[in-house]
Amino acid sequence: MTEEKIKVIFRNWCDGEEVVALFPEWPGDFPGGRECIAYNSIFKYEGGVYRDWVDKTTPAKPVDYRELKEELEEMGLVLEVREKATQKMHEKRRLNAMKYTKNHFPMRLVP
Image (tube, rainbow, N blue to C red):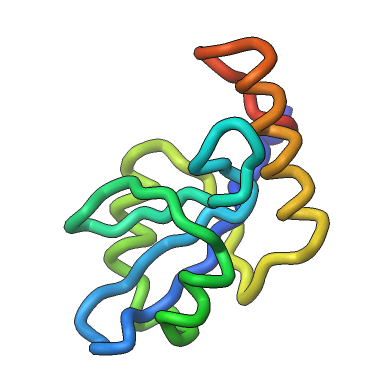
């Protein structure tokens, strides 16, 4: 059985000092799923509106996000790096948020 890959988008903070990993399919707010989860080595997990994250950051190159990607993989995440989120990813995040709201914690994310 193949493990499902988790879609992630790496972005550089405008100051160029830090990289953030955006998880467009993971909701950061309940109910609704308006926000996605973001991860950074400093603040760990945080929710935020995807468009706001994109407006505050620039695309990261593999050399920029290598360490953060390794950190996430050491946590057991199997990642699929993407350049940007699709409408389908945003819809999946909203479905995951509704599922959480309906079934409460712990939630099983929509595959």
